[in-house]
Image 1 (cartoon, rainbow, N blue to C red):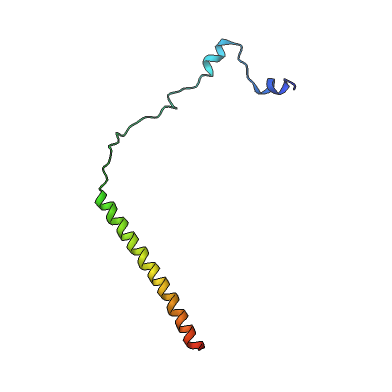
Image 2 (tube, rainbow, N blue to C red):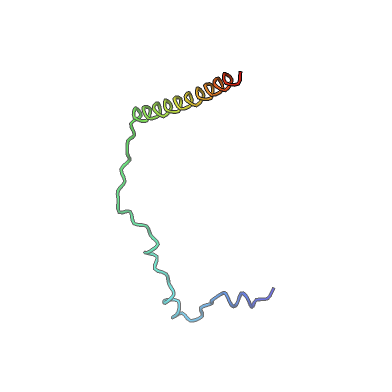
Amino acid sequence: MSTESLNRTSDVIKDPSQVINTRVNTDVLKQKHTMISKQKRTCIHTLNKRLHSAKRKDKLRNTIIISGVFISVGLLSFIVG
């Protein structure tokens, strides 16, 4: 493998005065925590109530779909028969 590609991509700094000018400011990279986050409490009763209402809605939707299918099949068999 030739070293020409390595020599082109690597920028070797031989002069110490150039090192000072190429340093990266690391203060920009640090994250500042401006907000102090409090640990929020969760009410279990509220979560259970939401879960119960979601299950009730799903059960109602499924019941409507199944009853619609049975009514459609019954009407179709009544018309054909």
